Image 1 (tube, rainbow, N blue to C red):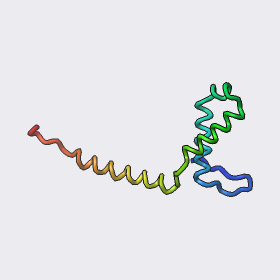
Image 2 (image 1 turned 180 degrees about the vertical axis):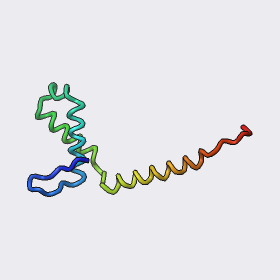
Image 3 (image 1 turned 30 degrees about the horizontal axis):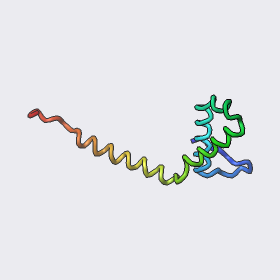
Image 4 (image 1 turned 135 degrees about the vertical axis):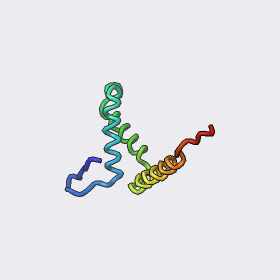
Length: 87
């Protein structure tokens, strides 16, 4: 994640950084919609969408998901051991 700082030099929260990344991704992926709606409506809708998409996500939640993925991958490697010749 890129480090974004507030105007006064303080760090911005994880959720705000996430919303900024979502906003930039949506703006680059929907350029035609900006022409149709106009800049003001488009920016408002993008901000609302970013807020809804990041709702309920905490920094600790993303770390838990990564740990869970590592556990499941270990189980899969244990199960996929040598193949028996009786098949």
